[in-house]
Amino acid sequence: MSYYTHLECCECGRTHPTDRWLGVCSCGRSLFARYDLPRIRAEVRRESLMHRPPTMWRYREFMPLGRDEPVVTLGEGYTPLVPLGTVGPAGGLHRLFLKDEGRNPTGVFKARGASVGVSKARSLGVRRLIVPTVGSGGSAWAAYGARAGLEVAVTMPVSDAPMIARKDCVATGARVILIDGTTTDLFRMSQRAADRYGWTPIIALREPFRVEGKKTMGFELAEQFGWELPDVVLYPTGGGVGLIGMWKAFEELQAVGWIGSKRPRLVAVQAAGCAPVVRAFDAGADACEPWERMDTVVPGVKVAKAFADRLILKAIRATGGAAVAIEDAETLATQRRLALEEGLYISPEGAMTVAAGFRLRDGGAIKAHETIVAFNTAAGMRYPHLVRDDLPVVRAGDEIVLAESPRSDRVAPATG
Ligand SMILES: Cc1ncc(COP(=O)(O)O)c(C=O)c1O
Ligand SMILES: [Zn+2]
View (tube, rainbow, N blue to C red):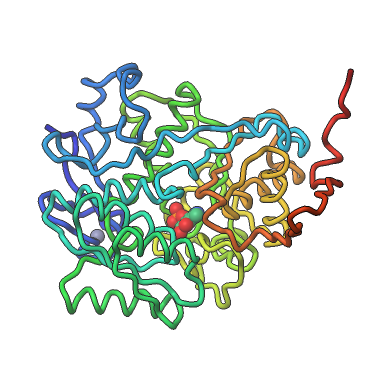
C-alpha cells in the first residue's frame, strides 16, 4: 500500500504513471511525485511519528515507495538543530540554529536524495547510474549504489573535484571519470555516454526522486520545532533542490493539516563569485542568466544556471524571502569562527549561510529574536584543503612550548 499516486509536470501539469523510471516530462521540465494527501490526512496522525526511528524514513507515507519496496538506507536524516549560542547572540541573533546535515552518511545532505533515488532505481529495475557532479553528489550516490548492488559511474571536473569526493567514490566502488572541461562539458558528455551505453543519468530535477529525499529537511524542521516553522531558513543554493524540496514539504504538511499556513522566509544564499539567483532576484527577473566566470571556494553553489531557476525564484518571493551573495573571505572567516567558538567544523556552504544571517540582521531584514535556521549541508572534514595548518615539529627530547592558542583571548582565567 502506498499514498504515492502519480508524477506531475511542474510546467504543463501533465500526469505520468509511477511504474517506470522517468527523468523529465515530455515537455522537458521537472516531474514531481504526488500523493493522496486527503487519504494521509484521514489515516495518519503526526503523533504516530513519535515511535519511529530517527531517520528521514519516519515520513514514509510522503515517500514515493510502496510498502513492498525495500528502502536502501544508511540511517540518513533527522539531523540535529544545534543552537549557535555564542556566535549567534554576538552577531545579534538570539535564536540561531544550525541544521547540521554534515552528520549524514558520507558527510553530506546528498545522502537524502541518494537514499530515495537509489531505492527507487532498484525497485524499478534500473541497474546502471551515471552521476555527473562537482563532488558531493557522487559520494552519496556511489555509497548508496554500493549498498543496493547497483553500478555507479561518477563524472567530475578534473579541475574542481574535491579530493575527498574522488576518494570516497573510488572507495565505494564507483567508476570515476575525470573530465577536463567545464561543467557544461561534464553534463553534455555524461548524457551522451548514458544514451550510448544505456545507463541512466542522475541530474538534479531531471529525475523526480532526489527532491523527495531533500524535502524531508522541511518535514524535520516542522517536527523538530513542534510543528511551528521557524521564521527564516537560510539555504546554500546551487541547483536549488533543497529549497524547492522544503517548499514542497510545507505544502504537503499543510494539506494534511499538520502545520498551518505560516511559511519561513526562504533565503537563497550564494557565493559572490557565482550568484545567478541573487542577480535575478535583485533585477526582479523570474529566471536566471547563466553566470559567466564561476569563481568561489564554495563548490556546492557552483551552478551557472539552475535547471529549476524559476521555481527557486518563485519560492523565495512567495515567502517574502531574499537572495544574498557572500564573499569567499567572509565565508572562510565565518567557517573558522564556528569551529573556534562553537566547536562546529562545518562546510563553506554552511558557513556562508550563517554569514548571510548576520548580513540580513545588520540590514534589518531579520529581527534579533526571530527563529533562524542556517543549513550546514556538509561536514567541514570534506574540505581539508581549506584549513591552513603550518604546524611546528618538535624533535624528540626538545621542549614543547605552549604559548598562545587561537582561542586564548576567550578562555577565562583559572580560579581558586
Ligand atoms: C555541500 C553542498 N551544499 C549545497 C549544495 C546546493 O544544493 P541544492 O541543489 O539543493 O541547491 C550542494 C550541491 O552540490 C552541495 O554539495
Ligand atoms: Zn510537462
